[in-house]
Image (cartoon, rainbow over all chains, first blue to last red; front, side):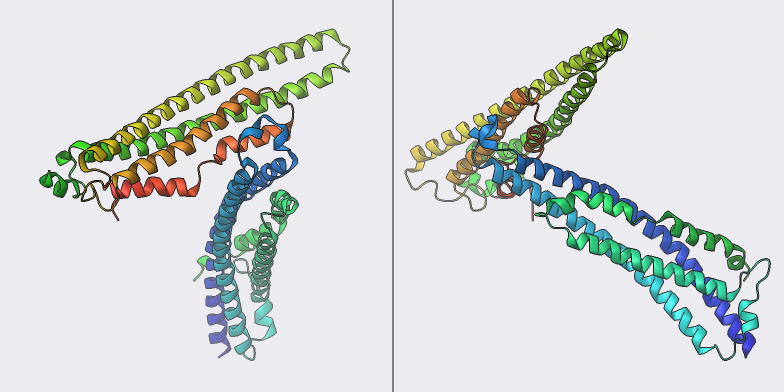
Length: 202
Length: 213
């Protein structure tokens, strides 16, 4: 029984890591598409701020009727378009995050169901080609946590943005970039390297 | 005449149109093409205008340290740089001038269409009296409506051209960065061309059978 449980757990671990690897690529490219959108949002905020600061009546543009309102409308509209594109990208990120969470959750459920048959020794045992089950579970849990938190941080950043709050919009690209966490990303790719032999040994 | 009517209302059969219907359908296509051309010129102009503003900014940042610098040679070097950048500025201004001229040309073509369509309306008045022709030339619009749509489109682009001419005159002379930015965004976002303007064009294309549902 214990052998059987061990086998199915290992199989499930392989599946989980494979889908993590795929999800990571999708996540990365979706995130990459966000940065130009964020910077154009910051740019639009800058333009709206400039429009606010300039007294058009004292400029050569004074003769143009409701230029201020019209331009403001155009810029706000453009910002709205960018925000809705960003929402689409966030939806893509959410799909990735949800699929990782679901897989990892299912894996832990399997582990708990079988925990009576899995002795500690076989869970911590590792070999040249395979890390221990305990380590692998931890890595997956860390990765799942990372994507979950990233998603929450990024989506709450976007949810706070409103076209009439210029300061928030202007600082958005910087704050967005500051959410990047190369060290945590690296830990995920390290984990994937460490399981590469394990994934091949079926 | 009646034969013409039934053929005129069949969209997509270009060869059979004659007279006013032919003219109005061609005008609709011209509107589409002229506006495409305008948009291309607008993008080009926006790039050039941004270069002009960047030239001005870099000029300012080169000039300022000169005041504190005592060393003659570096002053000469930065002067050369100023010369070079002012030459570049001059070139970009000429470019922008050319673009605005081309836009003025596009607008003059639009104006011609507006007056031609007014003429078509007058002709119809003469032929059919105040009530106009008994059946519409295409789907539902009266000939009067074509003339109205054309003049509304023309008004929007006329205002835009005036705005662009002002920007052209002022852009290289303003030291206020906020104002420069307002100029740039006014150029790019074309505040006098509204969503309804685009909708007018689309309905014109649909009415004349250039676009199908």
